[in-house]
Length: 440
Ligand SMILES: C[S@@+](CC[C@H](N)C(=O)[O-])C[C@H]1O[C@@H](n2cnc3c(N)ncnc32)[C@H](O)[C@@H]1O
Image 1 (spheres, rainbow, N blue to C red):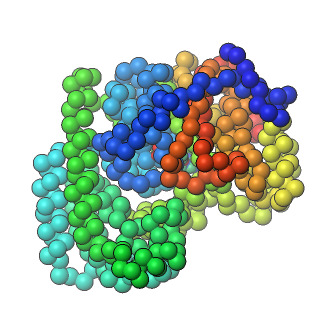
Image 2: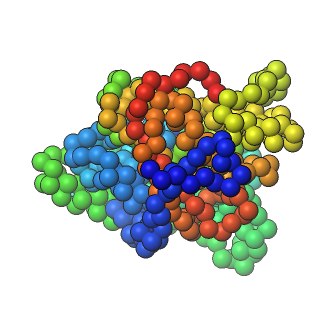
Image 3: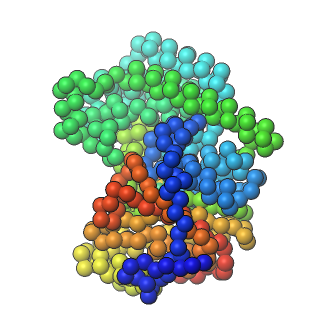
């Protein structure tokens, strides 16, 4: 493979020339990236379905087993399903697991419509005071008006009594999708935030806090998405003589509950060091869905967490064996040791993930990782290059790389030079040798 080295780092690591796919991916917009249930719920840093589709079609066959260890909202799982592959997903985020489940579970449209009709009528006819259902949310009155709290509690009560669990989860997702919209938070902020812009909209009467109507609209809209998935699933079943299996198997990408050599392909877009605060983004929804009691414990288990305690890094002596990582860490240590430790910990966690994926892949298995670069404390972190070095150490060989421009992303990863055009890579690794299991 021809190799071109990146500015300033040629001695440390040579990176293969990446084939540019911007022209291919740029053309997909609107419904083309949110067809069927792909747009069933917001989720930060989703990749467009065409990216995992490209990986799955290029590196697996019908009937194969595909893993996404950082599955987020389940984009890889739905694409695998459509392409006749069985899929396995892992995510630390309980809301991600619920979204992924609903996204990939076909529901009978007649049954769904009948249940929706009854549910909406029950909610409109509800006379009880359901305020006891309002969850304990820190600063609750800051986030929600009293009337909104009562209406959400009424919706919750009526959804929670439903019996058929797959259908109930669908309505939970409808419920979750309106929480931010009826909260006092600015809907455009990634992390919940009551902004002066939002207050101004309120003064001008431009925001609707009618939770019941919002819920009705969400149900009506998502029923259409669910019907699309149902139709698609019938086509899939006909084409592949049965439905592929979708399995949500766990919550930690560093400890994968699968047999050695059992997967044919893994495809993922991993988190970045201290970038998107996945737990904070959807904390209001998770409180309402009873998915968390506090954000702290979950936050500490997220790969890329910005949380680090003095006891962890006080006696830590930074000396990573990968020269390019050492340079990044040294630059950060000068600023502060905690930041350096956060970044080191991220790459160490990613190393554990590479070793685990290496273990569960078959002899010819491949791992496609979709990742770019970012900055932290004004230090450039060439995440894609560092992960390539770590993959090599973990027993992989890089057999290809693609690159593409990312535009219109609803996320908050600070990129190098604050460039508006971000570049992501699809790194393709193949199992080659035994992994070195030592820390970095
Ligand atoms: C870039 S997002 C993936 C988005 C996904 N590709 C999609 O289209 O929705 C990265 C995901 O990694 C998850 N994550 C962070 N730490 C994790 C861990 N220890 N184990 C598994 N997943 C983790 C986050 O919750 C987040 O959903």
